[in-house]
Structure formats: C-alpha cells, structure tokens
Image (cartoon, rainbow, N blue to C red; front, side, top):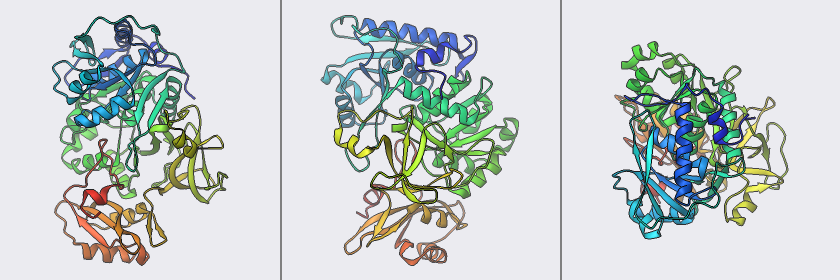
Length: 507
C-alpha cells in the first residue's frame, strides 16, 4: 500500500535537490522546484476562482510541462487531460460532459479546444514554459472579467478527486471515471512496489500523459519513489535510442505495439543498448504476444514485466513479479488490489475456473459519475467487474482469455481472439496480428484477422489460414485474413479489436 494519500504529500516527501523531471536537451527540474511550481499554480488557480473539485481540462502536448501541469492542477483542483488530437466535436462532448470550469493550453496554441472553451464560457488559461528546468512554466488567464477567489481553495486532500478520465467508449457512450488522490497514490505505490523503484531509477516516459498508463506508471510511480522521469514528446521509434543515450534510463513502460516498433529498430542500436543497460522493461494496457516477450528480453538482456491495468483501477491490478516466476502470456499476481474470478451470478470461482476478473482495493474508483446503470452492472458484492474474461491458477497467476465484449460468438461457438493471435504470431512471416469479429448473416459473427508481415517476408491469406488450421479447430480459423502495412490503433497506441471490422470495411 502507498505511504502517501495525496499528491502534495507525495512530492513534499522527496529530497528537494533530487532531480524529478528531465527532458531532451533541457536542464533537470528538482523536487524542490517542482513543489514550488505546484504551490505557485495552486495560488494562481485559487485567485482565478478555481479550487478543489473544479474540473480543469488540459490540452497540452506530451512532455515535461504536461507532466508538471498535471501534478500542479491535480494538487489544486481536478485535472482532466484530453487528447490534443481530438476534433472540435470531441472537445465539445468531453468538456461539456465533465463540466469543465477552465481549459489550459500552450501559449500560442491553435487547438480547436480554444474556440469550444470560449463558446462554453470556460476560463481560458495559457501555459508558457520558462526554460528554468524541464517542466517549469507560468500560467496566464486570457480575457474575461476578473473572477472571485475560489471559495474552496487550498491544497487537495486524500478524498478530493485528483483526476477525471473517460473510458474509451468503444461500444457505448464513454463513462466518466473520477479518481481520488487516495486512488492514484495507492496505485502509484502498487507500481513502485512491483518494480522495486527507488531514488536511483530513471524512467524513460514515452506514454501519452492523457492516459492512465502514462500518468500512473510513467509519472507518479517513479516520483513516489523519489526517482526521475525523462519526459519525451511522445512515442517515436526513430528517436527512442537517441533518448535512451541521453536519459540513461534504468527502465521504461509501454504498450505492446511500441515495444514491437522498438525491437524492430534495435539491431542498429546495439551499442546504445549495451552502454545503457536496463534493469527491466514493463508492458501493460494490452496483452503481449509471448514471441515478442522473448525477442524483447533477448534485445535488452533484461526481464519484461507484463502487468494488467485499467482506468477504473487507477491503472495497475496485477503484475508478473520482478524477482520471481514470470509466466509469458499471464498478467501475473495480484499487485495492489485483491483479484478474483467471478461467475455471472456474482459467486467467486475456484482456481482453474474461467469467469470474469473482478477487483477491490484502495486504488479502485468508487464508481462512474452520474451513471447509476453502469455502476449497477459494474459492482457486484463489493467487487468491481473488469469486463475481462480470465482464469487464475492455483498459485494466483492470472491469465486473460479475452475481453468479454471481444469474445467472438460464431453461431454459438465462443472464440478467444487472443488464442488465434498467438497461433498466427508463430508463423515466421508474421510481425503483428489482431483477430476480430466481423458480421455474418447466418452465424452472427465470423472470424477475421488483420496481419502485418515482417520486413522482407512474404505470405498470403491462404498460407496463413492453412498454418492456423494445423493448430486450431476449424471454427477458430479466420475466414478472412487482411494483409496490411499497418493496423489501425487507438489514441494510446493500443490495437483495438472492437470497431476494427468497420474501420477495415467488413461491417
């Protein structure tokens, strides 16, 4: 469990001269300066009528200013980071839905969010980097009458909402997930403990900071250990090894598609890898093919720690142990919250039985905002239902067999897309695969797979189907295989099965 219950406490506990944030070609920002920046931001926001519980939308590029601004805003109000790539209609939906009171953008930004904020009557705040250290900034309120000071000012406490995010909403309207300071600090502590992070660790953050994985594992977990975060402008496989040379990291966390892109460029960067040995590499947000785990561990000469997280758990739920048995294809042991397997009636199942993965613990949200129907479906006997189907073995290792919404129902026969993925990944020509459902007039759903081939390798759909048929029951073999140069991804780099049929013209 975390020793911290709110972010101001977490930051103030670290040695003031220790480096907190770094970035490419920038001097470091110390914990002392970061805490000062948080206090200064709190004073400014309170003066503009923004205090604890007020939602501040943040549309900032990835990097140290976004990291520092998130910490500062969450310590004074409620941070609502949004993907800068959203279109005007999306900004309008999210800012209205979360009842934002203000919007923070970069000074000189041309984001569509600005016109939306003006139309909605939000306080518009511009952020300007000062150059005094990675992440240092000043804020200026733009236009409008001078507001009254916040009635609910002062630093946030454990039960104030630090962070508000929307679920991805692949099949329905996105749901609002409020996460308290207690939730996010507990989760940061869980990640810190799983990875044995300490003050000498340097994390290379390539994850987006509008997403729970980047905010908790990439940012808060290392800071809760007094470590340093090297903040990049976002994932770029072509720059990764140059950043590695500059940052001298001890670890990084990413999603499988990023790891695959890094491994693909590793052969020309062996010297950098050898000069900057990693303690471990972490993967989360979606399942990692065992073939890629092997390849990545060989490239870096370090263990790959696969973890399991979701927004509603403030990220981490389980993790393979750093010093212990790691099972490829498993998401490891409970790592923070309690984890169990539940049947459809709400009864917990014994080891070896397949059911829905459920969790409970300090890091888990108390519920979706203004959504009693979703809360009624999500909580059962005090447990939160993850929506993932899985199994736990006698030692407590959890394996995800599929997202319940992603399980393909082919005329009553249930198929786990992940099982098909893993078989096709064993074909020597296959670099990446996502199996998904597409509509069928008689069976309801049929199996399809989107495949990216390895550079210089060839294979066609017929060959891949025949290969799959040697390892899979006939009903599991994809009826359609689409060879692509790239598989469409979500905003955080995750491959998304739901909606893929429509994106690829099969729906």
